[in-house]
Length: 203
Image 1: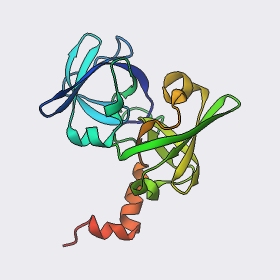
Image 2: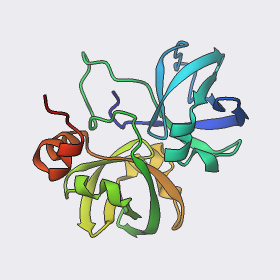
Image 3: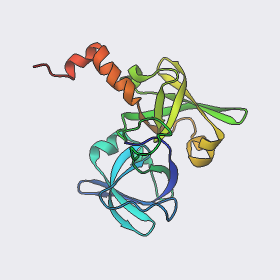
Image 4: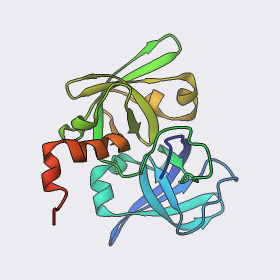
């Protein structure tokens, strides 16, 4: 489980393997010392650290994760968001983020209002039942509050702190971002919407 409070890292390499792809990252600083087997959220996707050497970590990306994320667009030098798992003894500063990316959204527009930057993002149809003004949405792993919903499009605002500590302020129309819907709304929709009959087996 994560909170959506991220830091930037740099992609060193990404290459195909027999079982998917191998991603090597340069972590933000020396204080990041994840152990092999630990979870690491990368652009909002929960991966397992399979190797570490100094500031570099290696993670394997299975085909399912590759299909659901924007990882295919990463190149050496790309900046990504990383987050270590939360500890339940700590305060939760963001939202509940599982690291299970539901799909990719397309940036439709961006603009500035004072010190804030806003993004409008088209959300896949399967995720739209989880969209709610003031609800949460993880965008490339960053925990954000939905400001407005219009059809399948949401608007999120990026405060100066988010602009300084993430790459979202650099997103341009047409780019893909990883999305994870509100964890609590998923559970609510499971029990309140008709589609739950196909999800929950009754005995």
